Amino acid sequence: MKYLFLISVLFFSCKGKQEESKTSKGKQYVENIAEVEIPTQKIEQFIEDKMKAMNIPGLSMAIINQGEIAYHITKGYAIVEDNKEVNEQTIFEGASISKPMFAYLVMQLVDEAKLELDRPLYQYVDQPFPGLENTDEDYKEITARMVLSHSTGFPNWRGNSELNTQFKPGTKFGYSGEGYQYLVYVVQSILDTDYRGLELYFQEKVGLPLKIENTTYIPNSQTLKNKASAYKSGTLIPKQENAQEFNAAAGIHSEAMSYSKWLINLMNKKGLTKESYYELFTDQIATPKSEWFTKVGITNWTLGFAKHKFDFLKIPIYGHIGNNEGFTSLFLMDLNKKWGMVIFTNADQAGDFGFELFKYLNNENLPL
View 1 (cartoon, rainbow, N blue to C red):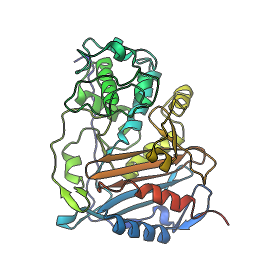
View 2 (cartoon, rainbow, N blue to C red):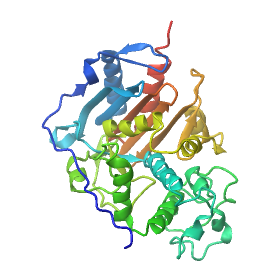
View 3 (cartoon, rainbow, N blue to C red):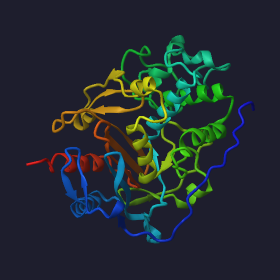
């Protein structure tokens, strides 16, 4: 293997039982986007009520004010059956919030002139992505830009079917995890490595510089030791064996404090050139007028991020939701105000939770 990574991946050690909730710097309030101060006691009561109503066992959440983590809370149970509480080391599956972090890594490759956003991806590999050997030729039009903006034409997941484009690449939006895995295949080829090497590359370029050592795409022994169990409507979901791949579409394992550090890095426009940062948040394609997108205000997709427009805010909000079996996650952020929130839960059915909290913070607590 030509690309050899000589780095050590460090992990947080367990510090014993944590308090049920924690506020940074002793603050008893946080600010919403309009800079209205909201008592943390009120926020915690809202969270507690919603967790009970939605049957959410455990949660890790952080709120960012002016580019700093202003509030962090861990609440509930990581493993209900063992009465094991969520603490600062508890790890959750982030599901699809894997995608924007991978998009950031891809843009670093663009900055290093190892990848071009608009060059057909098939030109980077010697062998076609598995499943494309006998398909139509449309896939040869697919670029990294199309993958990151979900316009490849691929289905979300192929299942047991052949992998085919469902529409002409680049012409419309079609959410696709398969597209992201195609790009993983290309990136591994560019770096002349495998999925393990790509994980090390991610740690070298993102994890270690930002000190988010407990965030991984490929679970390791420390990750699995601290991982929360998965639940669906209060029922424990049996553990599944982790696939031997770098899953850019849904594989990230993390928690709120670590993920917030990366969001703050984005808010501070670090790690990318000015041009790549601009590309990352530029509208690429309009999203369809579906019931779900309309409900949560998604109007466009950028390179890895959903763009939201809420009727109670004048400015766009960027974010992403994630849902794997037994886990739900969400982050939303205002880049100009350097405000954000990120949530991880071990509940399958918590898709509305984060949006309701966001609305509570930024609509129900508007200035008088």
